[in-house]
Amino acid sequence: MTILAKLIPLFPLLGFIILGLGYRSIPKRIASILGPGTVFLSFIFSVFLLFNIHHSLMNIRYFSWISFGNLSISFDFLIDPLSILMMLVITGVGLLIHVYSIGYMSHDEGFNRFFAYTNLFVFFMLILVMGSNYAVMFIGWEGVGLCSYLLIGFWFKNQQFNNAAKKAFIMNRIGDLGFLLGMFLIFTSFRSFNYVTVFDLAKTMPSGSGTITAITLLLFIGAVGKSAQIPLYTWLPDAMAGPTPVSALIHAATMVTAGVYMVARSGVLYVLAPATMEIMGLTAMATMILAAAIAIFQNDIKKVLAYSTISQLGYMFLALSVGAFTGTMFHLMTHAFFKALLFLGAGSVIHALEGEQDIRKMGGLKNVLPKTYWTFLVGTLAIAGLPPLSGFFSKDEILAGVFSSSQTMWIIAVAVTMMTAFYMFRLLFLTFSGNYRGTHPQSLKIHESPAVMTIPLLILAFLAFFGGFLNIPELMGGSGVLKEFLSPVFADAVKLNQVPYLLVPEKREWYNIALVIILVVLAILAAYRKFVIKLRTGSIETEAGSFIERLAANKFYIDELYDAIFVKPALKISGALHEFVEVRFIDRVVNGAGTMIVRFSNIIRYLQAGHVGMYMFFMIIGILLILFFNILF
Image (cartoon, rainbow, N blue to C red; front, side, top):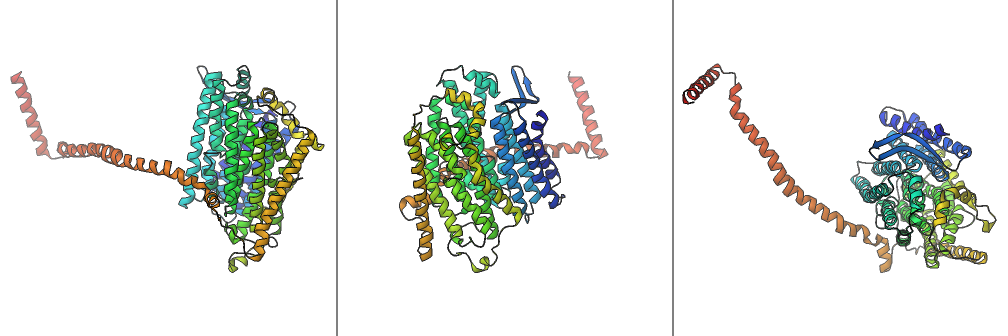
């Protein structure tokens, strides 16, 4: 088992090295096997590890990393149910995205470079979730940040895409500073980065301890950046600049879930910091509502899904804020299925329309792209939370946990669920229903994607449909398989949880479930009336009307606000520093020193001019000086 675990992250790393070194010379055929093939091997080994691990926790020593004085950090892996779940999601969904990319990127000149980057991405994400301490996690944390920069700016000849990549990189560095400070405080408080050691020592501290609160707040800042929560969320919609498979990889299987995973992994610390849990809950609710409101009025097919991801991540943090750790990870898993499906389905539409992303210029694609349509429909039903699809079970578990803690938070979560159903079916109807609204020449070229792209869609649709059966609650006659599987990881956190839970009668739970389903169906009917029935009469309104709608359509001007408060002043300050410090001071000092050396050299160069008469002249002057000093002194 130890060898298996050690090899899992090495396969995609090997793929990156080979493709990275030979990206100019390796044939596409080889790259299309090597890129997905390495991730496939990691997935098979992860599955084998799942069925053959006989302990709830296994620590694997790779090597001693840092040893200096009292500081001793080992590069170790922690194999437990939580890390195995994440490994399966990363390698499984990541594999399907890699296979899909063979078709989507087939005509791109950076084909080999793309697979090199995505292999490196998978490697760093595996390091992040497999590490047994915060230092190893931080390596993966920074690694996926680097890869996101490379992939978002993959088409680097476009300056807009480069700006989007830089925006993602810089905003994540803000969050990463909080994570790093949290790590420093962890070490000064516990003299260790190891999860087991830190959590065991933390359990001896009183709830609400200032130290624990400070640590969890700093770590949460890191999670806010990586998982795109208010105020560090604006980089994620701009990340759509990269190829669509990159959007699926970042939004579903890897990077944005890192913050959720980190908080869940640190559950013992967070339940001992009720103030942080409250802040997390408030942040999550604000993010859910804001992102869902913006998504309703977006017209870029990928931007709708991007804001949807931000809102769904808010759902996960809301669950964490009430101690619903299993529900969080359950929704993280199902979200990986249906959000990867939706992004790849959007990519199939974009591929069919030769790059068109504006849903106002789509429509009537249901019969032209049948496989894309039906799989996209499954993903839409799943994210809306309708039974018996996966999103229904995972969202219901979150809602049940939230209701048992705070009915106000439950009402907000249900409202966001309705908004999610509305904007997702708006997206579905405008894309696939009615008549085609693009140009006639474009309509003649529309075609279904090749099998290498549609097969991953079908597999993800199957997972999005049936994935919820992995954790059917006892209320519905299930045994909660995933809950039982993850229980050893979250046992201490659940025991220490300070959030008060209400006893909810079973009958009330059924009422809540029925109410949510009815409200979701009403939201879908509202979308159908607005974007299908009116579409037939030609009176559809896709533009925002009222002031609030226009505000939401313009993303509440948050980007413009950040630009005015941070970007423009920073550019002005840097321009002033360039002019007065660099040009007028540093350049003058450096250039002045150079000028003085040149002038002095021009004077003394006659010492080596090669003229005999000049040498005799200097010799005579030297003799006269020697005589003069001898006589004088």
